Length: 341
Image 1 (cartoon, rainbow, N blue to C red):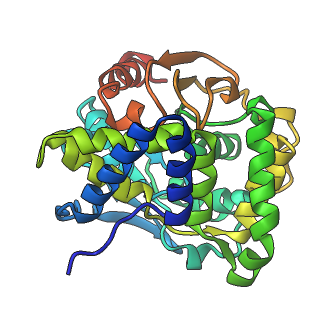
Image 2: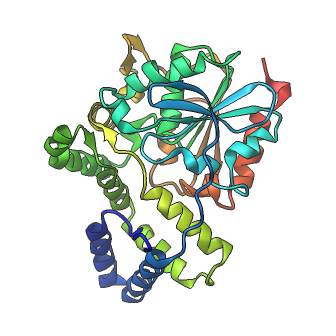
């Protein structure tokens, strides 16, 4: 039987469609057509997991091939790491391996094994021990919240260099309305999340949708226009399934993210501490921030200090869309052998 992969939470998505329909009824109708097609679309087999070469608790480093000095890809805690290794055509892991680097993808693992960890605990108890399993300090490439975490790790352990991709650091640069909306969402779900031990991914997904409701509706309307069984349509399904999957966020991590980072801007003010040590975005290592010009999830203004290059794309498109070619070139320059210490 075909499993439904409707956007979660579906009632909120339908409410977004209703709101958009008041201004653009044709767009809303097309989005509902796209939703119906998405639910019924055949699913391809998932890409096999890369082999784990080191495991600490629920987390592991997965070997993505290549040779040379190591690069560790650090994904967000919110969605699966597979977006950095989606398929052979768009895999960021493959692109970096072709540069003459040995690539490892961090897999955070099941949330139940991380239930006691705040963000700092994920760094101290999982990421740093995994990095110590490598033969030499790696370059870190962190995506979204994974970039924030990679920066924190670089404060606490030797690394070769750090690149962040659409990663937030100065949370006060988010629009006040977006921060307040997230705080209201947390206030309304905190008690239930504490009972569950985690903030369900569906709740966070709803928060992201609220940042740009028209874009959420428009992408399903565009999907309705894709030719049946087109490569573009198949990738849309793969990406939407990825966006609607993922482990819940352990309550301590959710609390620190929403109250400490979004609410208090601890990184941006220099007040973020992990294990008693201050965490800074001013590092002694080579560092590059790559931002997306049309990013509503992580606006470019929220990036850490340091050199920055902007790509004309959205938050996910910079990794898996047509803009990925520019991303790969920027990373090739940054990770070039001539720049290695």
